[in-house]
Length: 320
Image (tube, rainbow, N blue to C red; front, side, top):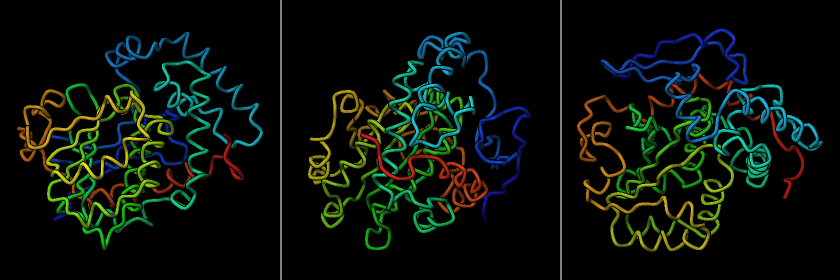
C-alpha cells in the first residue's frame, strides 16, 4: 500500500521556492515525518553555519549584494538574482566568498548547457522509469550531522538493459535539486551510498570514460551542495574496473571523500551512525524505507518547482 501523502504550507514570506508553490508534500512514516524541509534554519543550525561556513548576518548581506552585482553583469545569464534564498544556495557551499559563488553559478548553468541532452525539460513526470526500478532513494532520517543520505543501488537491483545510467544520473539530479532547496542540507551537506552488491561484468561495461567524467565534473564543480562523503559498499572485485574510469578525473578534495567499505559495516559506521541507517547497512533505524515509486509520487507534486528551475540559465552557449 502506498504511503499517504499530505501537504504542509510553506511559511509565509519564505522565498526558498522559485515557483508559485505554496505547499510541500509530507509523508508520514509512523513516528517520523519525511518532507522537504524549507523552513528557516534553527538557531543551532545558524551557529553551525557561522562556525563552518563563516555565515553571519553582516557577511551574508555583503556577499549577497556582491554576488547580485556579479550576476547582473553577466549578460548571457538569466537567473533569479533578486531571490535571496537562491543566492544563499550558492554562497553556503562556497563559504560566503561571492566570487567563488559566482564561479559555482556559472559552472552550474554551463554544465546544464554542455549536457543539455540530460537537462532539457528534466522534470519528474518524464523520468518515471528510474523511480519504477527503485534503485534510488533518500533515507528517511538525516545522519548524525544533519546530512541527507542518498542511496544508489547499482548491483543486483539494477536492470541495466531496462534502465540506463543516463536515467540514473537524471534521477540523482532530481533528488539533488530538491535537496538544494533545504537550508539544513545547504548547511550540513549530503552523503551518498553506492551499493554495488551483485555488480556483474555486463553491468561494468555500461560505464564509459565520458560518463565517468560527467559525474565527476558534476560533483566536483557544478553541484551547489556540500558532498561530505561518497561511500562504496558491498562492491565485488570487478568494481575496480569501474572505479579506474573515474580516477583520472578526481581531484584530491573529492578523492579524499570517497570511502570503500565492502561488507565492513564498522568501517561504514565510522562515518554514518548506525542509528540512522537501515538494518541492511548494519543500522538500527526502523523507519520505513521510501520506495522509488513513492518518491516519484512525492516529486511529481514539486513539478512546478522543477519547471521554474529549468527556466533559468545560459540559453545559448556555455561560458568557459
